Amino acid sequence: MNYTIITSRCKGPQYPPSLCCAAFKEFACPYAAELNDLSNDCAIIMFSYINLYGKYPPGLFANECHDVKEGLTCPATSPSQSAHVSGSAIWSPLSPLFELTAGFLVLRLRFF
View (cartoon, rainbow, N blue to C red):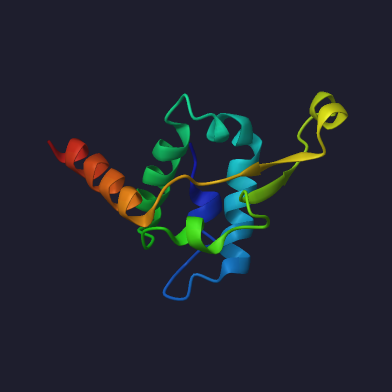
């Protein structure tokens, strides 16, 4: 995946939520169904790579980016989806500690 949508717009040390969350939504919304499917590791892998390539503080997106209680709202992506629902939400089941641990494991596996 190409994470430059996020890394080119979401920059520290301030990490403005308006820019970071808009970039995150643009990147993740096309994959909302896969990211919300708890039977796979897509969300964990995505957050690990986002943190790896962007060197973001743990939990940045989970803590700053939320439109509704369930997470970020995404527009319907296809006519067949919009016939059933008006959109979907991306939520992060990841705690900052879990994100930090997952990022450490990715780095460890990468260098060993």
